[in-house]
Length: 333
Image (tube, rainbow, N blue to C red; front, side, top):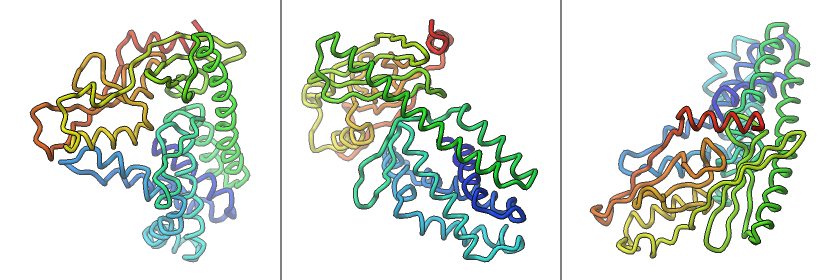
């Protein structure tokens, strides 16, 4: 989730448990602690572009790390904000823990995947109930939080946190509706999906991307679930078969290992780019939800030496045509 949303959510929970005289200081503790887990984005390597994918949303986002992460936040923030604001270190640690603890759970509501139980497992939890950026979610929390701080009124912070719980719940209902339509689409095509997932499209819970897997292919469709349902049939693509798609690739090479790392990151939803014979795409994400224009990929090289890594690339499909198609879906056209 974006840093602003993480911060205001952390502040809303911390302020919800605060006395009115401490509301400003507690809000600062919750805000900064709520954003702190994303400092793992600093873990990266110039030689290994996939290292950042492995460490983002890993140990700093584990539920088991909350006591440690919040303690670090308290050690840093207590002398800066809380010591002069009438809070003890123990109280500061508690408020930091409340803010820090919201982060990973909110991230798990998105589709990216969060290692909530690291190091017990490296499974990436993704509940697919909210987009990674959604103003309808963030703006009410922000407004209520500003009012709570300005008027020194904790119940407004509690209202903000209540909205933070209600909206993903609505997203869960919408996700289940979209998945049900996805199963009907597969049935109409006489497909028996191995798995099927619905993911919110960018910044809303109205239009969803449905991805399902058969024995040989992935299929993507868009579904608008409002008061009525509208479907937008989409594309399909063969599943990646490394030995067939890249017969020249040494299975013991670093590039082959990187494909498997990217497969883990993408929850298995990877294919060879139909427009680039050396690129592997994550089919889960695209601006237009019934298309296969991936937002990120890895690029192989036939001339790479055995220890050389793949390239990691991001793609921004922000053309006027794509924007129009997407907004037409939002409008139900």
